Image (tube, rainbow, N blue to C red):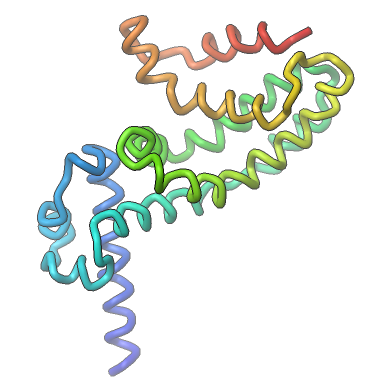
Length: 196
């Protein structure tokens, strides 16, 4: 009996997280209530509060679960390491970041909403989950900065800027250009500043 109730709890918790992720990504933290989540997950609202005492706890659990799924692809990292010059290394780095983050469009929307609605709680989560990605990729770019092929003085800042381009490309292009397409044009513009 104990095993059955544990697996039911797990599936209920997973259903709450999956439903919450979908709704939070679609409407943001402030755009959805726990009552709406409970209804969509087919659970009682009290069940949500048993798993997550506050709505904020639920949101952070969703974001943490989505961030845990972010993994660097080894073959793309190897391309950065084997790049013949700084320009190529920068291009491969952007491809690596874009591929890594765009594998989870729901995560991108959650991060965009989080930056607007929960910035204080977002910082430790990002440091914990994306910090390793930043550190690893920055180490691969460091030789190009030291050789003077990339003008940036700090490889971590360069990586963070590339991540920011991926995260903000849709909203910025819609606001300033009326569309959300062509991520590469934003990168090309930025890369010209970075190349010596």
